[in-house]
Length: 429
Image 1 (cartoon, rainbow, N blue to C red):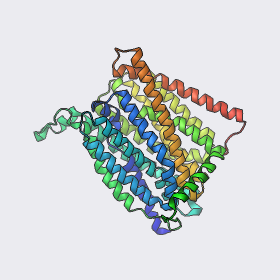
Image 2 (image 1 turned 45 degrees about the horizontal axis):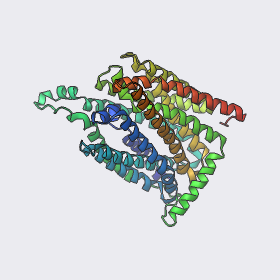
Image 3 (image 1 turned 180 degrees about the vertical axis):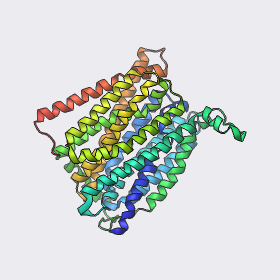
Image 4 (image 1 turned 60 degrees about the horizontal axis):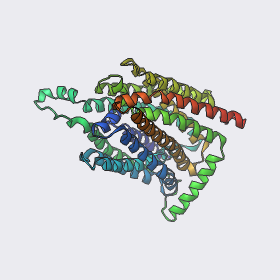
């Protein structure tokens, strides 16, 4: 299948363009600067996660039936739509509801992309070489994503920073109006969404994969049932899903509010991009390390390493040291890169081809279900803190919420450990 080799660089390009978004380093303060409260911002992220939960498994099952390329192209088209809404939604009474629409479109795009692109790329490899070749593809993906995130994080933070952009554009004689740069990172991401759509259109479907549309819905639901049986009857997959869900939820909660944290520790906006790019560059070092750990260590050992890094990082955020508190991005960044590598490696290795996109979609559902629950609980926490401290500002309320993250994470880890002990069984590697 030589013609399918082009899918591998296209898969990497699609992942980089789809996920390396210029507004990520400032997303928390961006929404607040558009006039939203912390609770509204948290609610928007819950809506986003719920949409993914609802659509993730059906989209993965449909991809296994009608073809992965079609679903990936739909994901790219939805990305164009979501970014257009985000870029041009007018401020005012309709802002929040248009951002709800943006989150719905974004969640649908994420659901369609998650699993379908990975399954397409994995099945493009010669079957005999998949176990050894896929980790190398993931290593290459991690490196390219690190480079893409580096560019997006630096550029996005610079574009957002009003004072820095005024200084950089001063020689032209034109100065951006106050507040004009708030959505410049969004405009840049809208441009890359068109590139993402072009990449998606150039994928090739593996010839062994059926992609007819007749009776597609019925066959898709059969795949959902078969995928669910595959997930819930496998102890090792269940352990992987639960452990990864816990880790992913807490790291993403922090990343969602990372720009708020940087503002709390008194860092200027453009530094968000520097930290975000530094976090991205960690992928260059983490990729070969993660590949060696998959080859030489077991599942429990690898996920324990990741959980330890997350706890250290979350404990650091609770201290919120001015300036020096930026060190927490190192353990959290390493843990997230390792988690993605481990989860993809094990799930693809343990799953049969005809339900691969479906099972990978269960991973997406698990992650986003955890993220939605974490988002709801975080919104409830900030609301209660606001009631208890009516005179506190947004930064103060956010600071008071941080010590809860490592505390609850540790409690979840202990409960998972106890569950493993009580069942008396360890997941096979």
